[in-house]
Image (cartoon, rainbow, N blue to C red):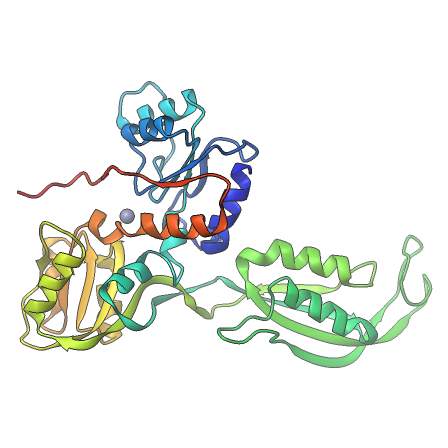
Length: 364
Ligand SMILES: [Zn+2]
């Protein structure tokens, strides 16, 4: 099994096109065609992580956070990023990062936080825009069923709990081929009017290559007429954060103690207690202050995330309980998520959970 086989599995869970624009995800170090000896899963890649991979005969590190975020211009080992990159390259260790691609799926980082808290009826807190595309194509009537079915098989036409979704209109298409043409129906130079079905389907943007190759392979015409547009619709199943409900309402102090224990954190920084029960809870792994307003708008009684600054606690406005559990703590279960997922897909070598905590923050 090669690195690309492992990364294909990861991208079935978390397509790279779901990652945020500022991010740096995918295979950061190494070659997709290298045979894999073992996979080490970690939240961060430090020098100790590369040492652990070497000791455990893993030549692929699957890291949640990318070790290289912005460009590197020198490789002298003057800081930890350069040292990790040098050590990985010198020891033929590949590094792959999934980061916000995994943040943005509704069975990813935040869903895992909701799962450990026992949240029910979970849905995406901030559904993502710009990742649904629409394909319209024109197919001779007799071939329309086949082309439509092949597009469905390639992943088009899925909307929430429904598949095989399309809209079809019958009409007349016209065309005339020049002297270099080879028309499937009619002759070159002849003006044709053909009964055609206009098929419209939506699809996830990451499937575009597959959808187009399927269309070109199965459409009978020499020149395939089609249009693709990016929709402004939100995808309700992709995006940052999750919101759900506790099985039963909790007193806010009990809730905070439960959160502290669940996330095994040395400290929960929280906003003013509001003397109201906690039932609806929003969660977002990592730095989540940007979503305080979204959690309030969604009617959450509490919002659990990390890296809230002093002034951001004022944004609670006596309407929500904000709880900062720590960045590492909020994302710690992501490692288990990746190990469990990859272990189900791959059995020919071990998927190893890194033993070392990479949390750079300590509490006293
Ligand atoms: Zn993070």
